[in-house]
Amino acid sequence: MSARHSCQSDRVLFEHRGRQPEVDPSACVAPTAVLSGQVRIGAGCQVLHGAVLTDDGGPVELGESTIVMENAVLRGTRRDATRLGANILVGPRAYLVGASVDDNCFLATGATVFNGARLGRGCEVRINGLVHLRTALPPDTLVPLGWVAVGDPPLITSPDRHDAIWAVQRELDFTGYVWGLPPPDTAAHGVPGGQMPEITHRFGRLLAQHAADRLMGRSATAEAGRRLVPSGAAWEQVVGYSRAVRVGPWVSVAGTTAATADGGAVGGGDLSAQTREALRRVRVALHDAGAGFEQVVRTRMFVTDISRWEEAGRVHAEVFGDIRPATSMVEVSRLIDPALLIEVEVEADAFVL
Image (cartoon, rainbow, N blue to C red; front, side, top):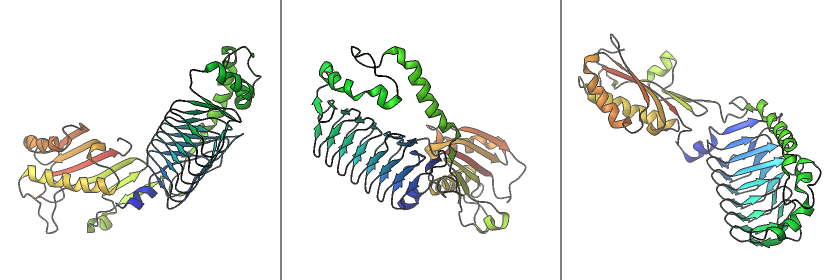
């Protein structure tokens, strides 16, 4: 399977309130990344496994050649879109909500950028650094490892200086800006517990709108729908089947044998050899569908002589001994050719990493 094909297929895309993701053909989005609503991925971008880009009332946009690494979360809000320029690297576990980030910035592992923040060109937020809401960083600003940037112009300081941070943060009105609530008592150092019922009610109501999201299939985007994986065998056209079918992350491989083109079987009367050849062909089908043996969750073996079960079972264990899928072995009176002693089916979940 080509790199281009793997980047262009089986993405998890959701339509949210009529708004759909748009992905440039040259971008690569991992099959376990999630794009929901008005999300625009620019040319040459990379969105890696586990990343979530979601429209929670406003768009998320990535400029050219920007990279979003594993398990990062980017949210757009009704008040502030999340817009990233070109050539930006967003590290693993980073969190951005309602943020504007100019070209050539580096947001390291665990970096956090809150609502209304603006980062100028070439800024760097190092590991676990925080850019607070409505904070503006001039171009080429550095937020050191674990430090906090707050305000406009920004105070950039270590997190142990809570009083100094709060003196600036208080004026930025987090509860009012984000949730539309009155500011907390000026003596309080954060969100008073009395406001939490209303905060969770408002935030929960917003998030509940995703309950009606629609997984986009082939008819809408040709990205997250049904994909047929042929082997090229003549019988596929005659009978009307595929060697494998992938729907989203689920892969089903059709009954597979050791049959040869001349009507015999690889391995002749050796059940172990036939089993090994059938599983080899299964492996090829899984690979072509973007999966592997390690992602198999179910196998079925149909044998013509159950008294020889150990011969097939030992070969099955060679392949799946550490994977341990659910399995069945069933005796049948015969297979499509008398020379065939076993037929194998498998099911896989390509989300299993």
